[in-house]
Image (cartoon, rainbow, N blue to C red; front, side, top):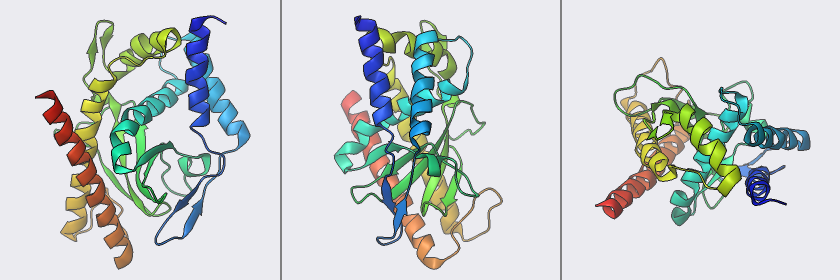
Length: 249
């Protein structure tokens, strides 16, 4: 076995292991939220990622989106670990949604309560405030945000933009070394953008006025939970941002 194959196989195996077939999360109180991913679903996703790393196409396809989701999870995981939070690839039953929006990533706390859902996109948005939209997801009893990686202004020797970064930096390097170039620059983009997106949601939730683009919880208990989770996530990402700023000054 060559080292190239070994690095790629380790990366793909780590991706496969990131999917749990039957995880259980918890909603309000200790109400369980069983979730499922079929064996075929996990095998298919793993095969798509493996083929992407092998063939390395120079046009963006669905597997590139899977890679972007996974790299985003890998970027956030070590930042959240000190706060006893983890990042999961959303199980099949939650990723697709049930009559409502699905998500790609889940941030959960030590009690396996979902604190935030993230829908990762390769496109960009036009916000001038370094933030994305989002709302309350009733099936998760948690907020979610869109996360448009296309707003990341990454510049590399091979080109600019997140799509060029995936094609020209990530794909060649993972099979050769298992390393992901510019991961720290990605974190520098993710942390304030996620925090700003959550702050925007919290401000809207406190306004008490209907909003055409945001679904807010209907019950008083859910509104309290919504704001508590937003405030908790804002606090964590704010501390991460401050710590990173301190480390680089």
